[in-house]
Image (tube, rainbow, N blue to C red; front, side, top):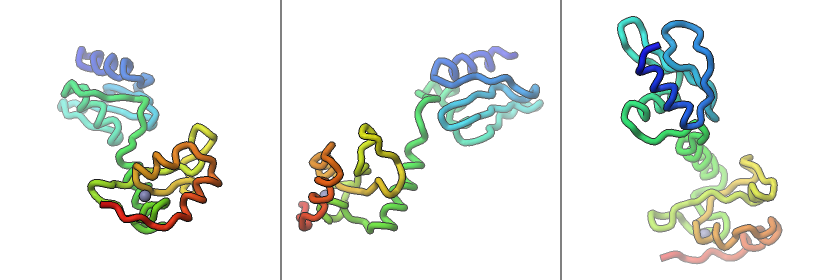
Length: 157
Ligand SMILES: [Zn+2]
């Protein structure tokens, strides 16, 4: 194993990845993160390649000395997908006040039944709302959140 590969493995392990046995000489690192199994390859010509985006991210973070975590889900992509689906379902409005979203009042993700109370990330439990409306709803019981939802729209400046 090259020094580079050793350093790469040390980096991955230090940041929460579980190191797995490589299965052929081209695999520089095979590891598992919360996002699944990732493999970083280097071919006989010295070119790097990656089994998926997570593997690529990990490698470039290592090479560029950036932060990386094997225990953090890829939220950016997920979040965008969830947001798009919710907008498709509910329209581009706050689930509580019915107001529009804007730069100053961007949508936040609301869990009707909060994760801490056993809620999940299914669409039926999710909606978009303003941050201030989200905070207002806070950890209220679901039934009280539904009452909040019935309030007429307020205009936001
Ligand atoms: Zn709102």
